[in-house]
Length: 212
Image (cartoon, rainbow, N blue to C red):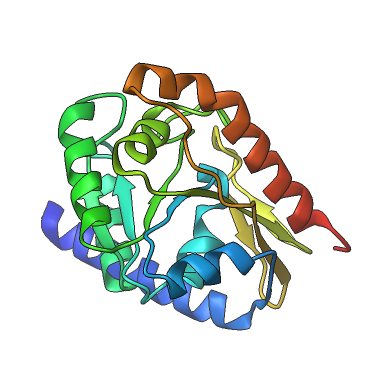
């Protein structure tokens, strides 16, 4: 019974994302570093806020980006939806059971796939920056790029992350920060980069809001 319910929710979720996303008027800004690094075959660690996951999940579908998804709660449903949209998934958390998750994430980066992490997920607080993404970037040498979304009209769920669902036919702006590498020689020093990466996320947010 549970498996049947999950399968139904996954089909409905995929249908909803595809149908709703097809109506959005998406524009992309400040993606020069994204295109440059991809052209050079350099995997990227994308960071995004949990509340802005949906439009980014739609925009980057079929790009074989790997996403980190929690093993608790609704993680199974989200993982299957992401896979149906063309993502690779790594299950786990960079805070609980971190070693196993970090190994999996480093492996997919080594295989040439971009990686997407919500540093405030899966349970917040909203827009807090957990250190796992920094540790992965330090260990692999992959550049980090923050991604942010603004919508001309959107629903916001009453959840901890104020989850954004752009309304049909909304203008959706996706913007990126400049690429940055974690300048640390050892993992414990990587945590000192948190403020710099939080500033990169703020820069991406400001770029997404420009001329909305």
